Length: 121
Image (cartoon, rainbow, N blue to C red; front, side, top):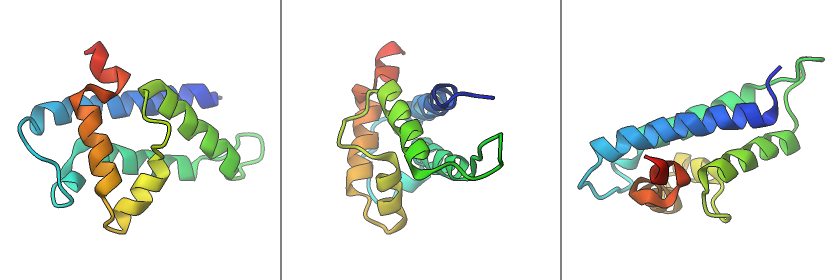
């Protein structure tokens, strides 16, 4: 069984790959509410949230508690060096309601090197 850290590292790698692709595909592009939903990073974040929402405990097949989901999100955030005030779940929830301001800013910062993944590349 994968640990929360194992899961978070896998999700962080997925975001890393999305950021790498977006650095190439969005070079010179100003992100907006119109085009942010077309980024690999946005798609990866949505996919990760959907995956985490479907996780179950192996011993009883019950869905993960909100606290355990939040632990995974926290570990993802730590491994990407995201700003402390950035919430993956909150940003995607806002995005689904067309309030993309925070998410656009965060993805733009990540693409410009605001996450440790970009500094490694």
